[in-house]
Length: 150
Image 1 (cartoon, rainbow, N blue to C red):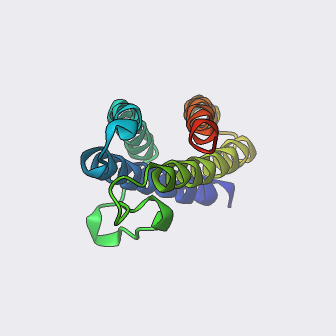
Image 2: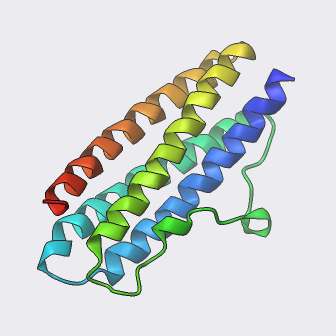
Image 3: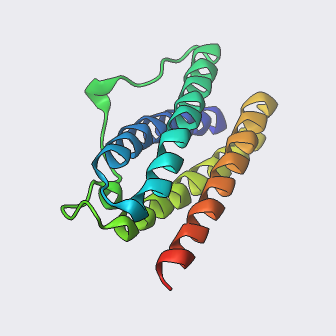
């Protein structure tokens, strides 16, 4: 059923946002060096945005008579966004952010389509709005990657 797919994707997106918050916070704390400061500041700013996304997704699940998943069912998937052993390895963090953003973009695109199929315009609108935020964040980190690859 289309409604089941909407719920599955909402729960996946919620968990992904929570994991992103954890990894952004960790990386914003552990990165070292002058070159890392701009990345750390960007990650710190994005923590609140990603947390807001999770809250919106959780509230939408509640409106659909579902519960957002708790830590007991949490499965970490952001392997490339783990803090680097070399705390000055800013490029690996940038690549990890891009991987996470690409995954989020795919999930929100899938959610837009599933919500459309389920005739759920509220979820479709929510997913479209968050999708735009994730695409903007990806664009920002693509710019950082260009600067660091020079």
